[in-house]
Length: 189
Image 1: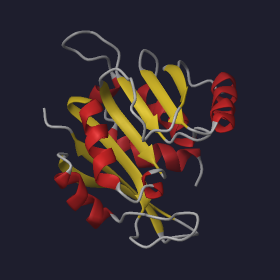
Image 2: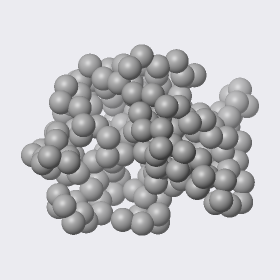
Image 3: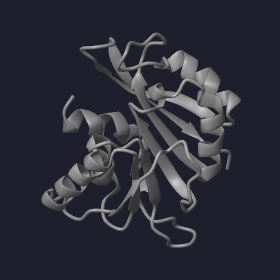
Image 4: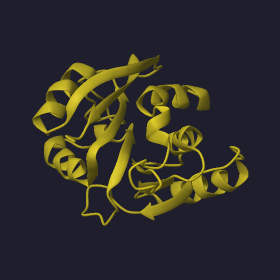
């Protein structure tokens, strides 16, 4: 996948009204990328959000985050959101502001027990907040992708964790495990 694939997987979940500052209080849109790595999806999210927004990029790999910071400085998107990189294990307790949206791309498959984590994640979202999951569309993994979750399994799990209106956004082929999908779920609002 390339940058445009990353953008297109996220685009349907980040409509223009979600990109703007919250119209009721004028505050900037605040999003987080959990398991950001070197920032492929963080950069895609930045392109969609544009200036005025804020993105928190979390990863436990400090070198990957340094790579993201270097790429962030070089890329010109015609105005970028503010970037906050956090060298943290995203499964730990986190002190983040209430979030308008969360992107989790190719990271949930590292967790065997997903439900307790997703319930904590759900609590970080503002009412009506968006959760975009990008994952391999299989339920059986391998050494590098130990615990993937297909879209049909995600629908069930999302509902159990309190997310609403889950829907499939897009798919892209994968050389390794058939295909990637992106899905959108909402926090009750």
